[in-house]
Length: 628
Image (cartoon, rainbow, N blue to C red):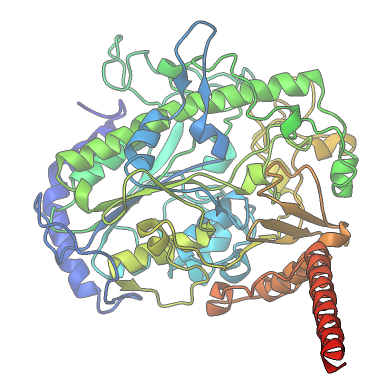
């Protein structure tokens, strides 16, 4: 069955189906020759030996599928909703059953810079933003344009793996600004990618219908009707029977389903003997500038989460009451209005509904791998580029900041050597994905990497290290308008234009109320042990014990008991702010004692000293008696 209605895309889909197998043999031969001239080289693999069943051999290198969503929070991975008297509805049952239950869950996974482009480049390079230097979303210094002028463009996971014989495939959203004129025309296929099916203008439009693709250098589309900015409605949605059995016979063009289908085609079109790396970047659950607030769900999932509550209640920081311990921009933020609360509750519900098609895509990918007998030798990773605020700390409509809803994200992994249904509390970050894949593939990078492989912790979840994670932000002021991702606290009105950051309402907040949207702020921070410590440019600081205070309600930076911890974290942060490579990977010393612990030890020592003195005095008195 043809994937799309447009003739150009029909020919592309047919070409992929007919020529992929033959082309993959050519790609394999060419890549083996090319391997000696590329920037990566084969290295001794630390991956476990692969099973010889299902057509694999002990020497065959594993394949990889990295599935990345956009703006998905940790809560959304586990979200459930029960209509009164109904059966609980799970947002992502396939993802939990086919990846988490079949592999390992990293419960303390963070992104170091919670903003789309810097986070995604960290995944590609294994480097912190201060080293890969793509520090924002907005061109020409940030976004795809900034990426294209820096070393990261030709030194990343795709170039390293392709240079070592892997077939590399990208499907979906890439980096902010790709295809956005006048900075980029969207016709380039970046180095390192063997197959390229990437959406243009993703960050300008975030369309779920009416999007355009670069298919291996050819521009195809638009697919579907984006509607108009005046109505803020799509011109036409998929039939309810899509993606498999449309009742009206129309093509199924919903973006998430199309990405899943292309990804499955590319897996099927890869030679069975060739390992591959597939990066599948969904747009969901990012907002799409269309009514209602939030992203567009697939037609079959519409209103399935209508009525679902916010992920956090007032006792967990929603519309937080006492913010006197927070930075000034939060202290000055007003409470969320009833209109704000309604808008973002709808946004959250639509985000959950949009993730159901992603969840269908996860099952499709796993089924494809299983049908081709490649599942046993493939690692599948599921994660998000950054989180999103839904009213926590009075923040809405963005990410940017180092608080848990924005930085603490889903991370699941299954594959050879990983015990099903396991969990680990090892602290990991997006800079660790590239070095993990390189280790498992037996490939070396040709540039320094800041992250470390987390495979040992996936293989043995009981292991721990004291390597800290750096938080950093260099966000540009206009990123909150260009790429905030959510509506501002303004009355619903006709969108001012594509430059807004929200889903179809006025997205240019006035200065007085701008702080209710998570604002772009520069900061540095560190996550180590149970603690998170943040320093702001104006001198304000925050310290949280995440184990005891997971919702970051009580800033302990002025607690005298924790002054030794605060000072210790400050010194470690200073080391990480400019770290490169191995310095970033170094484990931290043990925590100093808190003042209470020091006092207890002092009291204990004094008690022991008094007991020794009493014992000595007793012995002396007994000696005197004996002498007499």
